[in-house]
Length: 444
Image (tube, rainbow, N blue to C red; front, side):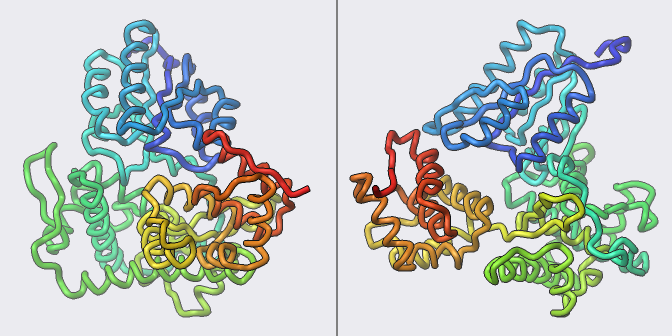
């Protein structure tokens, strides 16, 4: 980039299938990009039939929506790569390419962009981002950093708990071990820079300088000397690994950390099952009453502990509608959790002819449960309660349709169970049925 260029000319290429969050995050991200420079083009690639609401929101934000039917693996990647190469040829005034993706398939293209002399701003979830992409980025941003800031639940939560530097070091080393496991589980190799991005994403209060280290590598030196990690290969290709044998103490602390996060998710689910989601204040009170001490698992503030749980995909913090109200917390069900639930219940609830749903369906179910503020226990109740089933069957009869696909069937039962009027239920379900050419209607 020419040193005389003060304001970069940017084009956004967004792989929505790989990186997305909630509406507020998308708005803030787009606004922040606009503040940095001039956006000449903005493209978002996805199967928009299954993301109708998101499509409307992104169109309003100025994105050109490139529709990729979800029928072929990597189809979205190929189309986005073609658009990037075409843009490179026809728009030489673009000095910075904003790639919103973590997909390693783009590493060769990212390298070509850098060789061409343009800057690369990468935005993604670092946990599922290919290490090679991170290394090629001129600027990197965690998409979760665009989430609204979280206020403390209580004034005392803003005050850091008193912990010795040595204790902080050992707890941070346990967190680093978790980072290595998470990155390895995604199929990537935990490089030094990649690991730090994930460490900071999962643990918002992490700061090596607060533990007496001048640099990230100094912390790694200490962690290796204490046998928490080991390093393999020379810089810049050094890979972080776990030692062959972990100390009993590190195993114990790791278990306690995982149990603490699982317990938080369980309590959040209990609140929703009792009729309304807990606010942050209520959740903090419940956890304290039931003996959870977040300081003992490496967090000096409750707000950091909650944010860290959200980054792990265990809960979702929802901003209040009214200013001055407390945010509230919803449980989040990942694909593995939903797969286990369907394995245990699909035949009993849906019938012997229905198989355990595929991953794409499970993701849609997880999103639907979050958007409708529904737990799995509530979903089961909606699918089995005679009153709800009777209302659902009346809609099918009026529509002269024998059955609905499992996702639309589940959505209809949840909406009926939540007490929505028939017209509202039909409207929302028909939005999901539109790509299939099916329509339902209310009984006369």
